[in-house]
Length: 107
Image (tube, rainbow, N blue to C red):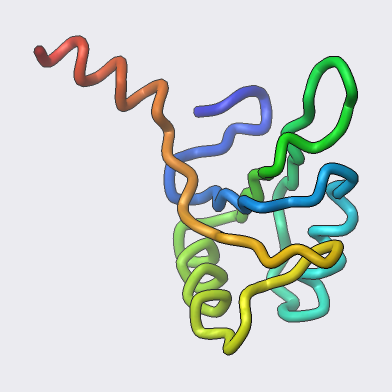
C-alpha cells in the first residue's frame, strides 16, 4: 500500500508525462470525458519545494476489474490520452516498497 490513499497493487494506475502545472482535477476531467467509470482517488505527486508536478500521478479505482478495463481502454485509443497538452503513458502502479520487502525477507 502507498500512503493513506490505500493504493493497492493493480488497483492503481500510474500516469507519467504530466505537465508541471497539472492538477488532480485536470486528470479527472480528461478521464470523465472518456468514460463514466468512477475514480476512487487521484493524486499528482509534487515537488516539496515548488509544489509543481513531478510529472506523474496515481489514479486509484474501486476494483481490479475497473483498473483493467480503464487501462485496456486507454491502450486501445488511437492516440495517447492527453492532459494539459501532454501525451501520457499509463501503466499499472507497482507497489515497489512491498516487493522490495518481500524479496529481502525471502532472500
